[in-house]
Image 1 (cartoon, one colour):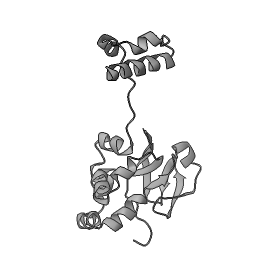
Image 2: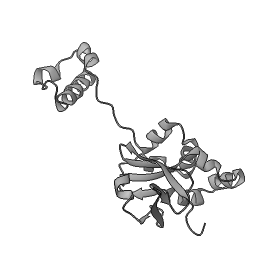
Image 3: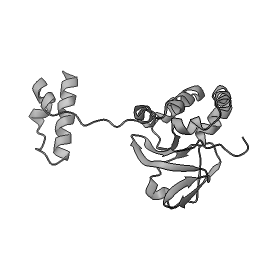
Length: 181
């Protein structure tokens, strides 16, 4: 019964917030299955990890995050800005080198945290930056070249501003390697 009340309350609150009929107290406490079916609850945004997995093009990144033990961190409250290499980006790394990286938790953690910036940095802010400090501790360079954002001179943002509940993902076409690795 409490679950049904919560669904009805959320649905009616969402409806009222969108300019629909105002929620009244009697309706929000009603125990009515038909009301819950008629007024679906607002969708819940996914966190960065769930968003990346749902996209289906970040399987290697998900594998790497798991191997490094960073999944729970990126499911945390954030906010985070993640420069997310696609499976195609990881495929540019020779297979033996990629397998060695996935097996070395310390090196893998450095590489992955080099792809994360603390805070929510949307593309409207990124285009005004020349560098940013990563969670790994080192800086990345940022340039706009022919209307595209280029990171460290070799990785292009191919899809900016993929929203998540705890930050934003900018999809990139090459894996970033921290200096001195």
